[in-house]
Amino acid sequence: MRADRTPGARAWAFAVWVLVAFFVLNLAGMIATVVLDSIGTHWFATWLPAGWTGRWYGMVWNEFQLPPILIVTVEVVAAVILLSGLIGVPAAYAMARRDFPGRRVAMLLFLLPLLVPPITYGIPLATVLYQAHLAGTIWGVILANLVPGVPFVILIMIPFIEQIDPRIEAAARVYGAGMGRLFGQVLVPLLTPGILAALLLVLVRTIAMFELTFLTAGPTSQTLVVALYYAVFAAGVRPQQSIDAMAVVYTVTTMMWLLITLRFVNPTQLVGRARR
Image (tube, rainbow, N blue to C red; front, side):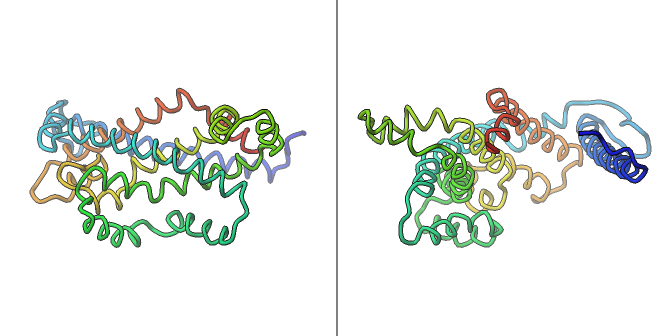
């Protein structure tokens, strides 16, 4: 198919590229500003900081006790990913393959945590967890993050399951495969791209989930996003450079999670598989 070379089409393409370049330059400028400020001594009316130092990262590391926070973040994210997959994939299979009374109501209930802002159901959820003596612990944070995590997996997995021919499952049953072998040896290999896509989105959402984590976390169960909030709004006066250093730590940690995940997941293959 030949590209449109009319003046209007060229003007439109030029405008699109200008907007993309403007967005990229603004994003790069904001990131560069935060990074430079986090390693600068002071920065007022010059293009670059007056000097360079790494003491802001040392201040953040000691003041906010980053090692325990990083460990808690890894534990929460890993647990939410694992439990969301173990619960969400079978639930998505039941929703895709079974027609039962109240199916649409169940689907609506699964979608509500994705449609409603987390703060609206986060407060009553936190109240329930506090009454159950789970809020303030790492398990309370994990349970709170499962509320949007499991529906995310269900919503993404249903189209992947529906595109698998039911005759494949019927053939496996004819050869004596029970539900366990059918799921583990037939469906999971076919659903791997969808599972990886769903868990990748759960990973990103869990790392960035502030409201539910903030409402249910305690002193020993904070994740990085909550620690970043306290770095900005907690009592006391802190240098702006230390806050920027905390933001860099949060960004680098998130990017490391994504790079590790993308080492095993190819987003273009996931999109291509989903469209088949």
